[in-house]
Amino acid sequence: MENVKHPLSKYLREDRMPHMWCPGCGIGTAMNAFMHALEKSGLEKNDIAVVSGIGCTGRVAGYVDLDSFHTTHGRAIPFAEGLKATKPDTKVIVISGDGDLMSIGGNHFIHAGRKNMDLTVICVNNLNYAMTGGQVSATTPVRSITATAPHGSFTTPFSLPFLAEASGAVYVARWTVFHIRELQKAMLEAINKKGFSFVEVISPCPTLYERRNKMGDGLARMKFYKENSIVKNGADTKETNIEINKPFVVGKFIDIEGKPTYLESMNKYYDETFQCQLGYKTYKGTRYSCNISDGGVSEGCMDD
Ligand SMILES: Cc1ncc(C[n+]2csc(CCOP(=O)(O)OP(=O)(O)O)c2C)c(N)n1
Ligand code: SF4
Ligand SMILES: [Mg+2]
Image (cartoon, rainbow, N blue to C red; front, side, top):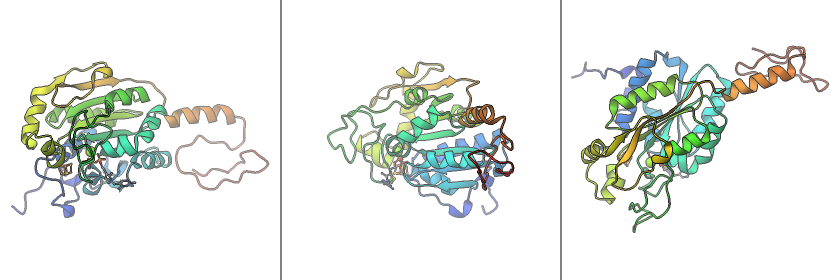
């Protein structure tokens, strides 16, 4: 057995194995789909950066053998934005949980979408804050039992495809960990997309969410996904609400071309505004020294 290698082992930090995820958890399946998508993308490992926040899903950053960053809770997106701004040629991909990206980090998500930051965001939505014991998150369906809602949650959850579209995302898809081929394809399309792309991965947390809601183990949940997912590519994202134990819509909902990214808009504006000023150069990445004299931009101010 010693010589048996995972076919995608080049993307894995094998010295970190075994991983910490519970039996039946869907995060490993989501990560496997992600590694397949990377392989198909043809990107070199050095051209990719992965950013996660804190949570069970956030551990992905520690298991992938790439330039990866396990940032603070809710701050994966602003960290990724900074990374992209200084390294525009790097493919920056955020992978994190529903609590991290949509609860504490929700504000960053909507503004990154609004600005069309050139990022791919993959959210593993297990409908709760798993790592900290299974509390209500921004995606917990009404009437679900959680650690902080022992009689059932009563607040309206976000529908993530709807939120992503409303924020300005140019690519939006949702699949479950049962839909492994579709998930790989969606991740690949999102990675290849210029602009703010978003993939929601519906995934079980059998240890906390499914157990409390008497939904069975991880396998039972896969059966539920199989029998209750309504594949509807191009569906109106207003139809993507998730209710407890009810069928829900999956598919590719948004895929648009031609919207300028944040850096493209910035460069266009500054190029037009400063075109007459000696020494102004279009921003292509990190520039350090800046000798601004007499209010203008002096020659040699920006080093490429
Ligand atoms: C600022 C801050 N607040 C709270 C926490 C505690 N905390 C760690 S992980 C987590 C929830 C993670 O939930 P989610 O992002 O859905 O990831 P999951 O574990 O479900 O994959 C919380 C509240 C923290 N680490 N930092
Ligand atoms: S607590 Fe839930 S999300 Fe976390 S590893 Fe276990 S099953 Fe997965
Ligand atoms: Mg979660």
